[in-house]
Image 1: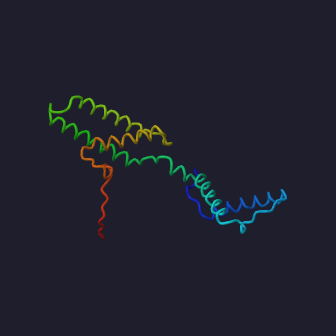
Image 2: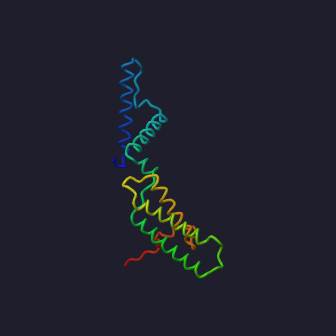
Image 3: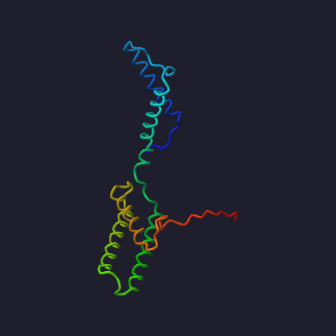
Amino acid sequence: MPSAYYLPDDVAALVKQWIKRERVSAKENGERPVYWSRLPDWKRAELYREGHHWHRLATGAMLEQCAPQRPSAAEITAVRDHLTRCCERLRSMATARGDLLPEGLWAQLETAEQRAAMALDIVENAPAEWSREADAAWAELKRWARNLDIDYRGLRDPWEPERSTTHSNS
């Protein structure tokens, strides 16, 4: 896979090759040749923009930006552990409430656990190439992790570690 990096000099070299080809073609056709120094700024900017576009596509930078990233093993483990804690907590809270819960709660909790388990299985056993199915399973898994957390307030994903803003010199 190509590197996702390119330099401005790479774009400039590509644009200059285009101009050189246009100049040669114009001379062969008996037309007025195109020179870099005579191009208006807007045309240069347009060529540079196109050059950046082709380099982003060729280096894989567009793919990295558009395609979903595969979660790391640590992220998958964190979501799995979080879901386990949430389901255990919900089951213990529901048991403590006894018969004073809405009808169908246990069936829905079992369905949620089964769907989360299936999504987790797909994500954990995904092939090296991250697929749309695995991405959809990962998205569903994160939704279950948020929705089954009774304390989730929407500020950050609950399985992510706390980020401290204080620093120590120790």
